[in-house]
Length: 367
Ligand code: ATP
Image (tube, rainbow, N blue to C red):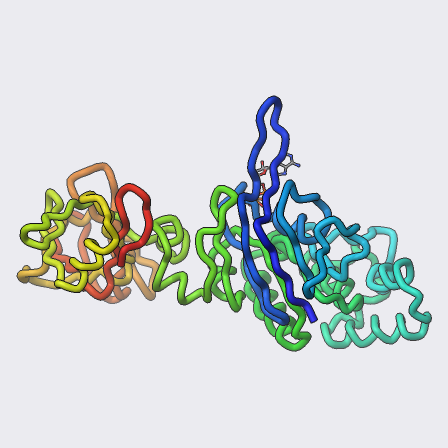
């Protein structure tokens, strides 16, 4: 069993006379067997949270429970968790077999033959039997990471903690290893917390994704929930590639329209009441994903013209960039075989079921 309950976790680091709040009132409940990804920009507190769970950092306040036992102050070596690091952290003078068995030889009373059997079974499962007699220096990055993973698997922990384990691998291998890791996790059914700053990794790997910024949890949900129903502007901009477009607008409540210098946007009664119910200010941010903007050949009642600045053809899709009179550039993603010239005028439309609205002051989602 690996139920992990993180309650009101806070971690401050001293910084001269003041302090840095690395983790701020974090609450996350990880279910047994779940694969949770912590994702967020550099410095948002992902690694610190993971290190508190591992017992490598002592929280300033808050509680960490493993299967209802309070482990907040328990020594790292007594926690039934295995950590996998970005730099593999293998012992260079030991063979892969010795690296994999080391934790069991030193930290348990398991008989030698059982240790050997576990290492052998794990190596078979991971397809690394032929690497067992090699030292880390003789292995590629991907092979070293497989051995490092194998080393944590043989311990049969209740929780795997992984801190950017694939970031030292090249792009192709990273994609392969993502799938392998996911399959492995499903097969083993071991609760896993995986830290990354890469939103694609988060979206493709996690059962649920916890998005952090400035030490605070912004949203936790399935990847698709976070994509379709972002809780705030930060999440909306962080999840999805290319990023969601954000356009500052004001609300003209007499007519129920959003107003921008370049366009007015009539809102349905339903959306108008969402804005009223949210008690939002009259400045809103309209969010629309590049793939949700429609490019149409001719002007209609709901479209408006923009001038194309740059077109980036990527094959399957093209990114078309335009401005709305200001400094800001916006992106539309169109089918790769649609031909659009730089400098030309196109008409674009924002389907109402695809637009997001955020309070201009707080960034909280309204729709
Ligand atoms: P990255 O992806 O860059 O590793 P992160 O999201 O994992 O970032 P943390 O490493 O958890 O972020 O850091 C959160 C904040 O705490 C940062 O401002 C960082 O500078 C600070 N911090 C982390 N460890 C320490 C430490 N040992 N002493 C002082 N400040 C620290």
